Amino acid sequence: QYIAVTTDDVTNRAVTAPNTIHPTDTEYSNLNKNNPTGNLLGMDTKRIKNADKITSLFTKGEGAGKKVGDQGTAPKKVMYLPKADAKTFSAEPTQFMTLIPTVYNADTLGIRPDLIKRPIESWKELLNPEFKGKAAILNIPSIGIMDAAMVVEAMGLYKYPDKGNMTKKEIDLTIKTLIEAKKAGQFRSLWKDFNESVNLMASGEVVIQSMWSPAVTAVRTKGIACTYQPLKEGYRAWAAGFGVPKTLTGKKADAAYEFINWFLDGWAGAYLNRQGYYSAVLETAKAKMEAYEWAYWMEGKAAEKDIKSPNGQLLAKAGEKRDGGSYEERMGGIACWNAVMDENVYMVQKWNEFVAA
Image (cartoon, rainbow, N blue to C red; front, side, top):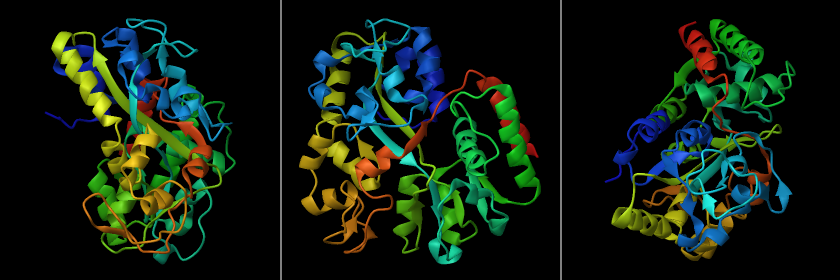
């Protein structure tokens, strides 16, 4: 049984009731909270058939042989454990991975090009008064504040040493900027839900907002122009994976490994790629996709044929290209990764002041 819950709910379960999950599907950004409890057991890579084919983005922090931005919780920082039951991370690769990666992406702003009618090239456009009452930001504090930090930097107000781990002063500055914009009427909505973001964009109530790639896809399947806009300051990335609690033993542990091995075997990866996400083992996913699909989604090439979603809806017509180009271009443009800050409690309090303002 697959139960869908929020990221925070996954963390709460992993910490307080690990015997209720086998395996857990969680984000790398939460491992700084999960791992010190000792409730998650390191995944034995010797039991993972395609472990050596996992993308170097996770294992080395590299895309196409180049280092990518690692502000925040870059997976490579929390990828390995010195031993299976370790509560601290290993800086070097070991036999034990915290999570076996499944899905990841590089997020940016979604826009309605037909309504904006001019190029959008910077994160600072989210707070441009030109879009007063027609902008929206994601109302998940740990992610929304990083989108806001991308905007603050793009506006030239401040340069963060680490957007994923702000000081109280940096949090204050970021929230002050958001509150000023909100009081001036900039935001149509602060959205929490995938469908909400789709409806805001599809209706035209919002023309620029924080967005997730499959939400852009969902707007397009309605026949409405929507672009996942590459921006000169780069992307905010995130990643998720499967982990096992220490309570999982015997046949249940065997079943978890069997499921995870199936997940990396290609079918699931191809499904994720067709949604605009990325799979952890590119080689097996490629084998389950048509050559023209791979060329469109992964190589940034013009579609040879119409591109359809996993459930058959039209996403892009022949001749169109994917926003942001190839896998290497998008991954190479990562500026920071989702994270849970040391000052997380303070940050959430301040974020709630923004929501209430």
